[in-house]
Image 1: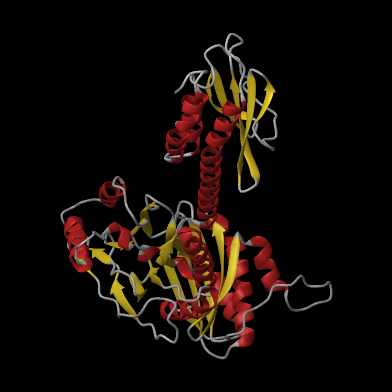
Image 2 (image 1 turned 180 degrees about the horizontal axis):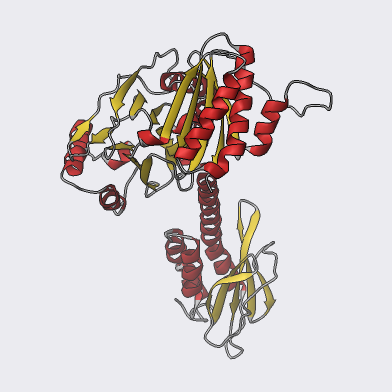
Length: 488
C-alpha cells in the first residue's frame, strides 16, 4: 500500500482492498484481510473486535489491547493522532469495531486515512454480519435437528438394530427414523423423508415424527397410521410431500407388516444371505390426501434382516434409482455389512441426508410364551392365578409369583365384568415379564384412586402401583390391558 505522503494513492487502492474483503469466505477471514490490508501501509498495528473480543490482530509491538469495550457506533474517529477507531456497522446496527494504531515516529492519521479506513470497514462489517447470521441459522438448525431426532434406539427383545444418519454436506433436511415399542413385545419401525432441506423441512419432519409416535402409541394398523399421517400432513404443511415406510414386527409370530407411502422399497436379507427387494403395494407419498394405503406381510425368519433407507443412500446423479437400489441389493447379498456399507456412503460428501435402519430379526422362543383362551366365568380369575403360578415356576421365576398372579387376576376380573366372550391371557418372558389380557370390549379402563368405601376400581389401581409399566390399547375386536415386571 502507499506511504504516508501519498494519501491519494492510498484512496486509489481502496477499491482493491474492498474487493478483497468482500471476497472473504467468512467473517474471521474478513477480519484478517482487513488487518493485513492496512498494515504496514496505513497503520503499524490493527485489530478487529467483535463482542468485545479480538477476532484478528496484526500488532508486532503489542500496542492494541486483547479486548475493546467500544460500542462500534458512529463514524470512524481519531481517539488521538496515532489511534483510529473504526466502527463496523451493517444495516444500521453495530457488529464490531476496528482499531488502527501508528508508531509515534510516524505522522499522525489524517482525514484521508480516516476516509480510507471507513471505506474498508463497510465490506468487513457486512461480511461479519452475514457470517454471524448464517452461523446462528446453522446453530438453530442443528439445535432443532438434535432436539427432534432420536438418540440410540432402545434395546428391545427379539431384534438387533443397526442405524446410520448423516445430514447433507450443505444443510440438514427432513430424514428421520424411529424404533417404537408396541404392546406384546411388538415394535414399529419407521423411516421417513420430507422433501426439501433447511429449517422448513426439519420443522415439518419434527411434526410428522411426533404424529407417527402418537399414532403408533394407539396401536393402529400400519395402513391406518399412514392414512392418519396423510391427513395430518395436509394440515401441518401444505404442498409438502413426504415418503414414509412403516413396519410392525411381531417377534412371537415372526411376522412383519409393511406399509409404504411412496418410499423406496425395503430390502430383506435372508438367513442364507439371499437379498430380495420387497414390493409393498405402491401408494403415493404423504400429503396428497384421500389416498388409500395398503400393506404386505412377510415372514420374519430368525436371522433375517430388513433394511430401510432414504434416497440419500442410493441416489446418484444421472443414474436410474431402480438401478441404484439393485446395486444396494447386490452389495448386501455379497456380504457387505450395514456398518461398512453406511460408512462408505457417509464418508463421501452428499447433497442429501442419508438414513439407514437395519433390523436383524431374532424372535422370542416359543418356550418363553404361554397363552390361554378362557371363558369369562366367576372362577376364571382363580384359574388364571394358578396358571400364572405354575408357568412362572417352570420358568424359574417363583420369586415373582405373588405379585404377578395378583395383578393378572385383577386384570382378568375386570375383563370378566365387561365381556361375554372368551378372554385371552398371554405371558411373555424376555428381559421383563409381560402379561396381557385381551377381551372384546372396546372401552379402555381408566385408573383412579378408590375411596375407603369404594368396591370397584381397586384392581387397576393396584396394577398401576405394583407394576413397573402398564398400559391399555385398542386392538382389532376389542382391547388389551397389560403390565410388565422386571425380572430379578
